[in-house]
Image (cartoon, rainbow, N blue to C red; front, top):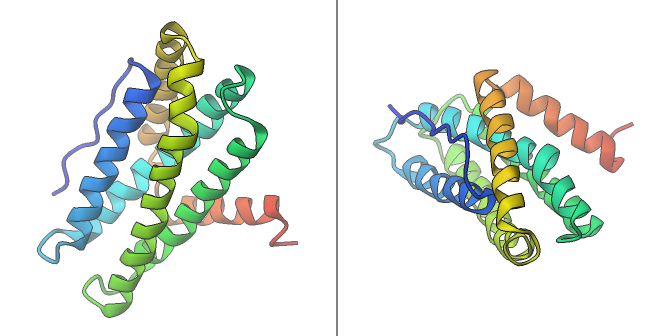
Length: 178
């Protein structure tokens, strides 16, 4: 059984996001382990990924943009990478056989997508947040992000249906769907 996700309520937004990033890495290692309860790990990853990403998009990115720590391109790129993460997560949520080669390939694709995003976000969004936003504002933003993240976790935001909806919404925004 995967441990319960932490529910911080306050802290520097950079530190809180980085804590989730390390948790993503731990969950990816568990997902690659054939002796783990992979369905449970996928469910936990889905909950965390959606809550984390949606809270960033609604609370963090707009605030950092308003404070001119990041620009519109960084916001759009972060949102696009969240959508790609949801898209590569979906086959894991829908998999019939967690021991199949297809599942293993899906883990690989999801892992590459997620780790790429974590790297870019840490360099291109969190670094400017460290240098261009005051500690007071990062703490206030941390509380806002944590509250939204926890609200989404409480709602059970990582179901396959929810992830499908997020993928469809992103495709509509990007013009991939009519």
